[in-house]
Image 1 (cartoon, rainbow, N blue to C red):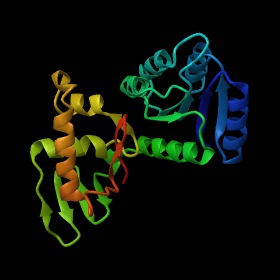
Image 2: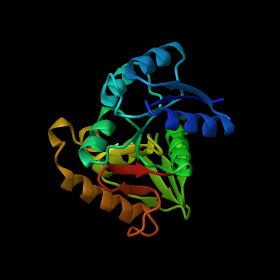
Image 3: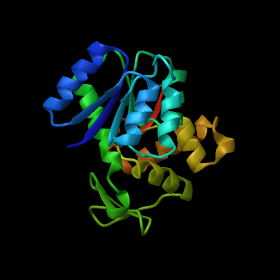
Length: 225
């Protein structure tokens, strides 16, 4: 059973999540404060965390930082904060996804599944099939089903590799810019948009309607296998 830690101070939400998640086979633990969440996580390390940002003692961002010091378990933020700055701050702190309240249970469950996919080791599967394209992370080679190679520039490859190694993870613009170009490029959004468009042109069947390299407006980008 996948162990899920739900961190929220609204009893009606934690009760609803407990019922829904347990019915689907999840092992659920609940915390109403940030301090309790960190204590429970240390005693019974979760495989996924659902986290509200507006907690009575600690801000949810502090909880993310605290957990990221020792665990890579996916963190899905579930919050009433809808401002873009709040979403980006949570993602930059280490959250894997962000769902706003009010929310649909089906959407949350889908986001959880996507976040859990990130936990699977890409290193154990160095060759990935994405549609009709084979991506070999070891040989750094992309091949079409026809056998033809797809040529990428070093920057295009670096960007693709970062996203492929985090399947289903929502990555902020700042995260991608810092990983691919370095800390001094955290505001160079034009670079990211240009190279993302280039990757879609080379890899997506219909670049105008991408299926794998997705944009999440106001938050960042996501790779869906």
